[in-house]
Length: 107
Length: 118
Image (cartoon, rainbow over the protein chains, first blue to last red):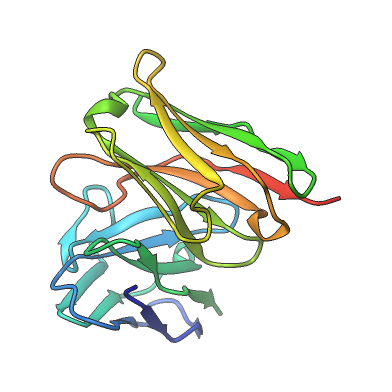
């Protein structure tokens, strides 16, 4: 099983700040890594697919990078509406796994 | 409108059964892969099962032998039969879609809550 470890678990940030969330895989998954945003009482929403590919309708302040075992989700110029939990997800092999999540609080 | 709608959740005693439904509209489930992902209260996301377009299925070890995924193409609906339920199966169950060559989940339902308690 491929284990995904996100850091940090929690971060309190101010609007307009730049935020970086990392996701480390226990073995290489090339670029089969996707990022989701989940707001309270909502279902997850796809933000970035295959490490760095943008998704139509997602604000351009969200970007992703990485390959192999180390991946990053970057949020430029954070907005209040970005308060949410963020999850990485690998589709390289079964069982499908997710990171434990990173909760962003906006000060 | 392209959407997934889950239903069938509820309160069930340990050892009991439930059948969850994932009804699709705006696309055909037989031309996509449908995944079930669950989220225990206050916890993260956990993959449960998948049914591929060619009808192959796969399960997480935690549910293998207890849960069964199936599909009714005429109803454009995917089912998840939950048997021998345990307290640790308590969660919101989401269905999610994979379509085309991308294995990212581009469409999620709103979820249905399963509570296993006596």
